Structure formats: structure tokens, C-alpha cells
Image (cartoon, rainbow, N blue to C red):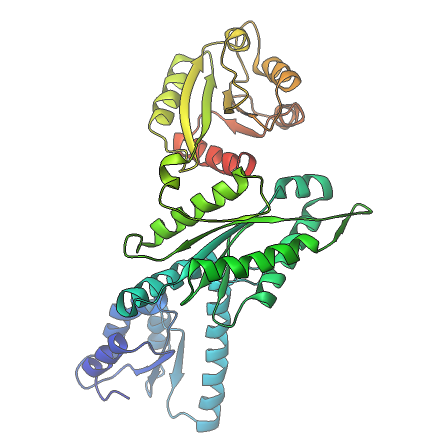
Length: 404
């Protein structure tokens, strides 16, 4: 309880309350002024502010809500109603907080909460020197599961995997959905050797699980990479990157296995080469895309090269293909001599989508053009004029989904 506004502000910054009840008339500062100053902070903290007053005029209520109050309660307050009100609002806040940190599909903690827990683990390591380990786990060939059995079965695989991890983890371990088919487990006060033992138990158990799809049974495996905290990697991004490198080697070594991060892996890791190829007869469009992608970062798993062709024939006759690389082709729909749809047909006849993706970038507007492109094997259809940042964002999503 604070008897004035100044004391109340100090308490807000000293502790994290769940609810703040504040009179609009205080001895030193009026409640509206305080609300205006704290509303941004309280929203970030998921703290609800309720204004109280004997002056329940409509203009006061309107001002309270416009400034960000959750509720306005007129005095006098009946005790039994007030207690029920508090319980109701606390339950609502708990539900909001739960939805903010829980993944809908798997009911695991999400990436946002993982980042928070990693920061806390780093702080604890710095204070107490207690090691912790982080594992990244990735479902092997998950795209093939979706393509073969459908997304509903794919979701069931992820849900069952999440349930298995929750069942087999220790009480202190925290499981997260990192993104897509990738998960993370934080092992507090645990060496990487112990974490390896725990992950291997999960891996062997999951590999034995039988799934049913399209009238047939199948098995799914996962790969994992583990890193242990040390004075050299006490940063969230460093830990995630090192765990990801170990995961990369687990997949590179044949999948369905777990690897520990070692310091020499950074130097030996092979990057997959992504070739961005722009095929467009318009010089300005071509140069805009080339200049943008020359400074674009494809992510830590890829290196890149950017190529350009001013027509479809020169592209098809060009010496651009390497079976060890990946290709993202940005193809114009309207070009002289040979239009983009004909070029797309030749690409799909000769090259697999495992290595070569095509995104149509064109001024052709109409459902029939979109359908023709997608049925012809394009993975995206982008209309001109376009925003280069949006194009690169869409390409990043395609690459991470198709080539990782």
C-alpha cells in the first residue's frame, strides 16, 4: 500500500505487481498523470491498472480508459464484489501471460520465453558458476512427412514429439518450440555429457514410436546439437549458434544422432551455397534486385552468389548449375523471345525443387497467371512494383523451409 503517488511509483519499479489500484485524487500527484507516465511500462510488464474514485463522472471514466486503464471502479467499494473482481482480473492476466509464452500447437514454451530463460541462466552462471547446457533438436525430413502424409499428420508428429519431451524431461529442464520443426531444451546445472545422456534417451524412444498416415505406418527421428555454458560463450546468440552448429553436424553426419559442440567446428563447418539468379529483361528491375541481394545476408548456414541474365534463352543456355549448390531463381513473366512461363517449364523439366526454386516476379495481374505459375512449379508469385525488402524476406522464408 502506498499513501501517495511518489511512493506508489517507487513501489512499481521496486517490485512487479500483478494489479495496481490507484485513486485519481492523491495528495501529491493526480492518478491520471501517474497513469500516463506508467502505462507503457505496465503494458510491457503485463500489469493491469485500475483507477478508483468517488468521482465517477463519465468524463473521468472516458479519460481513464483512453489513458490505458483496464478498469474504473467507483467508490464506495463492496468488499465481496472487490475480492471477486480481483480474482477475475488475475485469472484474465494469467491467461494473457500464458498465451504470450506458450506455443499453440505443442503447448510448449515459445521462443520468446526461451530467450528470457537463457538470459536468466547466463546471469546465474556468472553469479554461481553453475554450468548449464542447451540442446537444439530438429525433426528429420519433416518436409517429407508433410508432403507425404499431409499437414494434419505433420502437426500430430510435432505434438507427439512435444509430449514425449515433456514426459521424459526432468523437473528442472525446460522444453521450448524454437520454430517450425525445431525445438530446444534448457538443462539447468547440467554438463553437456549429462545432457547428451538425456537427449539420447529421448532420441531412441522417439525413433521407436509408430505413426499412421494415409493407411500406412511410418517412423520419425530427430537430430540434436548440444552446447555447454562456459566463460567464452556467455551470450544468448553465441549459445544458440554453437548449439546450431552441433545440430548441423548431426544432420551432416547422417541424421538421427546427437552431437556435442566442439571449438573446432566453427572453422570446419561447410556452408551451403545459395545462388540468387535474376532473369529479367528490364535493366532497372534487374539492377535493383542485384544490388539488394549483393548486400543481403542469407543466414549463418549459407554462403551466396548473385547472378543475372537479361533474357530466358541466355539463362537456359548458361553454365550456372552445380548439383552441390542451391538456387533461388527470380524469374520475370514477360520477356522477349521466350516468356517466363516457358522458361519455368524448361526449369521444372530439368531440375528438381530440392535444389532449384523459382519465384515469378512479374507485372502480370490476374488469378489465371498466378495459377499457371504455381501449377507450373513456381513456389511464389510476386507482383511488380515490389519492395526489395519484402522480396528478400519471402526468399529467406522459402530458403529456410525448403533448403534447411
